[in-house]
Image (cartoon, rainbow, N blue to C red; front, top):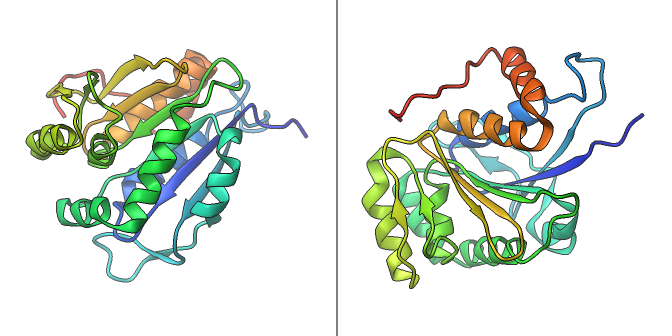
Length: 229
């Protein structure tokens, strides 16, 4: 069996938006070395959380069992090529940022951005209001970013409070802020389903257009090129 080329970590927390992480999970788990579901997978995905189980947002009954803990991720962070930070409702995000758990997640984000790519690529992806966590961590300073269209001002505010102005691009499905000094790309997406668009964009960058198109075909999602979120 061929070992997947890229390792992907998704950070979960209580009340996180379900599609923010299941959407990217579905996309990255649908990427193959050639256009066939019998071909070797390109990505290996793992979910991490501080607590277990995780209660998904807006469901009331659905719980998610993460694969491992944030402590485990901290010790293995260098193994991962893509780190995904999903979003949530504004109150959940504010409470998370102010909590010990939030500080632990933000420390992981900052550490990840210091790691040189293992195989030419390392990517930090935030989905929806996950960008607010990046902003609060101060890692969007001087960069372009986007988020859910209802929270552009909030992204500017939390980033400024962390000591860094961010250029918020409105009406974008995703924004690639380019590589930092360590060579890590930061990609932020618009609201909720825009995480699918951003994930397919990253697949194209890492695995090629054919792989991205085939993943889109598998999940029956046509990657949107429009400017409206």
